[in-house]
Length: 318
Image (cartoon, rainbow, N blue to C red; front, side):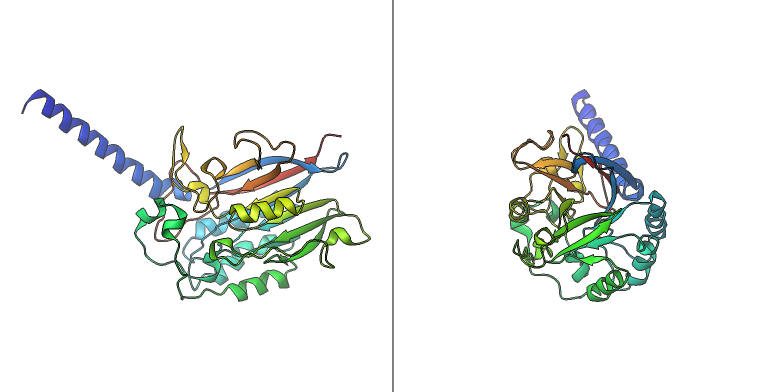
């Protein structure tokens, strides 16, 4: 064998070894390497003490994921003031009891939620390469194997959490009134933001509102525009999985919606500010969670650990 051919063969073997090692890491280690992200957002009126908001998203839970269940239950030890769940909690027709068990320690805390597509319809086996296509090229009618979204919503509302699926509501958190507006899942075109200024808009009542938050599953640009126009102080979203697959120095490969890759996860200003800059004048804070799970048919993450987020809301500068 000539030297160039031997070199090429060696390089190919080394590349294959790296690829196998990366796949093993993504499928066996990182997908279960849960992280708590801590973020500070200056949105409260000047002089107010902080509020701690636990942001959960995209658990995609199946009953066998005991480690994830235990990890979520332990989040109650953070003693958040408010819990916001941005959907895609269910990934198996029999997951509801396990999901309620996972969330049970948090249900005594004020909370609110919206649904994602995988709360309504069970995931199906698909070619994982389709995930890398643009959103417009791979969207399709939802599968008809329904999940117990209604029962799940009832469990949460019975515990006192607010259902924000195309609704407004208000919660009292640490003595402060937080106005909430939410949408149903934009990925399934179920989003209909409620009209501002109606009787359900807490900002029109006699009691003052300290904070106004937008909550949605999928951060499609049309939803962000509507919430920005609604005057929210911050938008809380999930859906993207942070790209799920990312490359060092490049970031997320896709966002699974029309949001730019630079805002696939974390805290950013929208619109107007660059993804790597804080929100400025005319910009709304946007927090996108990379979520805690994946489809059971694509159980890999690379350079994008599964996560929950503890958002510390602090006072704006006077």
